[in-house]
Image (cartoon, rainbow, N blue to C red; front, side, top):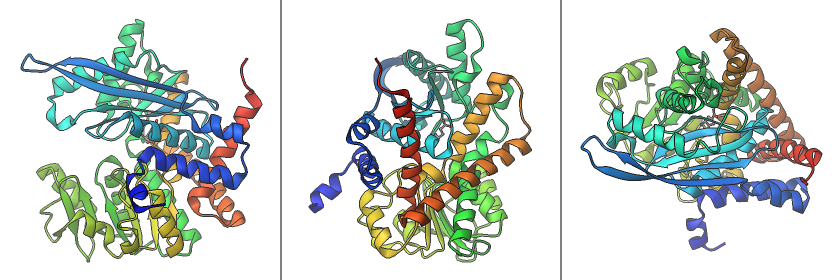
Length: 420
Ligand code: GLU
């Protein structure tokens, strides 16, 4: 492949390539390959929102359902200036495999709105959310497609979506979204779930590879909901967090960052830069900092052919969706750096989303202890399956996770048959 091809590989093309490689490895039937790599439904919506100054602004949003053979579609909604149909397609496909790796009875979906959330007031954010929810309401529902938070969306936004759909129905429909506030049917432990899952995966895979965990030097890119919880749990477990970043910049402290102080500092100052005892570094320096465990917890396309040779770590754990390009994957494989793929590493979020959906449908709510125990058990089981697949077939962890996932969805597809 020419360098120009490498550089223009889109996120979606990259995700398709990962699927094709795994399908080839499994010797998957050609017709099944075509079915499984094709998105089932794609919706683009253009809609107006009244801004606070009285003007009207148009926005574009998306909802893609990749596959629903194992159950209703499931996946988050992100608000981002980079959101596009192609990005949402890639993320929807990743959700199909993520749910399948965990054995959760869902298909995969994703949504997005092309917007910079920081430009909107709270009232504008609410109007945008309610209108977007209305536009995609033709696709979503407790048995159809269940959104959740993702990049730049949160429990408040899920509450507005739930309320909007409930108003349309004339009664409460809590199971239409997950990641809601606890007071309206959310689950204990959901906010922390993705970071907790990343922590469990990092700990278990380090153990499996005989890498030190307590005392390990850890670098985390991203200090949002996922990165900050991961950082805190790893810090509390005795890891040394030597570098962190958020959207404003990156910080480094070779003696270890006190994550609880960093959380307090961000609460007061809105960013990590300036944390006493730390020095400012660039995002590129952060990723290339020598460490034992590197955790990209920001966004896709961070580890590429351009920097993969300079990454100095013993283990990469993908807390973000799609942070490693296929080209970088090949380089890490050659260099013997294991990469725990997103579809396993960050699956804690959708796992507790599943618990929330189950609790909502039964109207019986679990304690945080029970949620965390059940999460731990499901993650352990899936990690065990993936490690076993990797060891017995001598394949990288990403291929092992894809193999577990694709075999499940392929079997469901075969058992159901082609309608009519
Ligand atoms: N947005 C999260 C993810 O990418 C969670 C999705 C969900 O809970 O449905 O896995």
